[in-house]
Length: 183
Image (cartoon, rainbow, N blue to C red; front, side, top):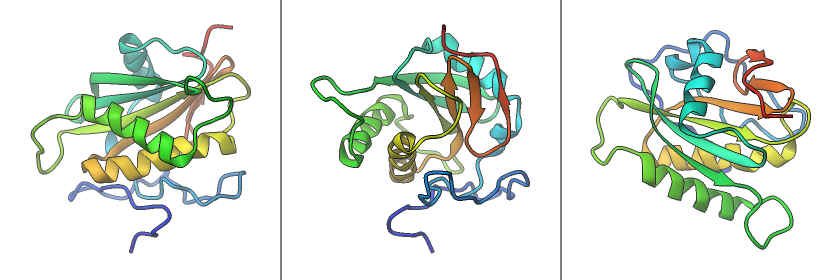
């Protein structure tokens, strides 16, 4: 049964659990908002998926990118991005603002006709300066992604963090030095 605070993400009916997915509590101490197994497209080469996303939207500091991934081939069909922080605000957005922005971005890239099973999944790329470790300031985007993909009935392919030092996947141990933000 999904937790009310962190709703479960949609799962494709024929999906098997991902063996490298670990249910863990991030260093921030908050429960992991992405707790269901990710779609098998995440098993592919993560660096290749990041390069495909960067062809649609260039990586730059303080940007959140949402990409619609075609599950049959792992290609990026559409992408949308959000610049963070919000205009006129000093700090990171609160949960309500992040959910509204993720919802608007997902609405612009999701297919108009729903398919069962889904033919697309969503990948999120969080771009920021600093170390390649997940911080509490990133949690707002993860919880917004979890709630809005559940509402749009889309599976999550993967969640990435990209900094000037390299990249890291959220649900896997995969990481690398390229692609990265320009130093």
